[in-house]
Image (tube, rainbow, N blue to C red):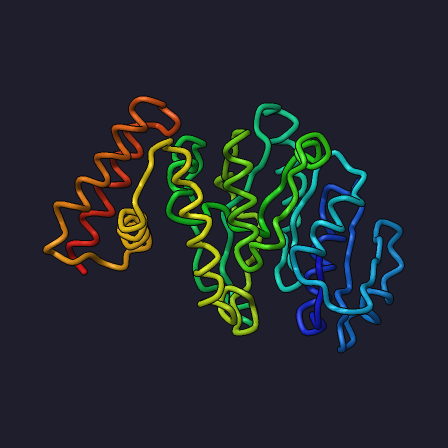
Length: 289
């Protein structure tokens, strides 16, 4: 769990892990060059499961995650953020599921969204099937990142770490790369309280995050094994991010999507019926804008 100037919510996050029903784990916390009381708060805990690492200067969220993952000795890696709260049964549920489903490499869960005071805002209803997740990753990340739980052998046997060059969308990029090699899934249970506040990356760095996410979206076009022009790539990005389309260009957008559907029909990389439904929804939404 990376921690940078995390003192305000930190104790709740730490306590939520230490109070898990499932008790056999190591808890790696990385103080990422904090200038507040983050380090001293972590140091107050005497639990032997805690491994505290410290950076003299800030290296960044995903660099810290890579450091922690590469030092982990467990069979699984559980992602956690320093402003969220894991429900007491989270580790037990995710561990038992992975033990029973050896073919699944990574899972997420539904979450309860809360505000900075901990008040409940909403519950997510994330899709669960791998074939649908794989298709919908074309549009956006399909797992709430701090709810994810995955096998450590995808790191050590297959070299899966976060791409620090993706910066604010490295979690999205990680999920896409994982889904291209292994089945992934969301559990229907709510296992995490996901805190929304003004300092989190998805809000504070929203514009930059979207730019990096667009790069991940365009990179997935290689899965269709078809050559697109720069204009077609621009059109695709407009559709996939719901930016709307010029009505005059509607026939070109339809032609583009049919081109991708034909390519996928030949390769069957994506579930064809689910891909068709996604493209149909993108067109319908674009007409309304």
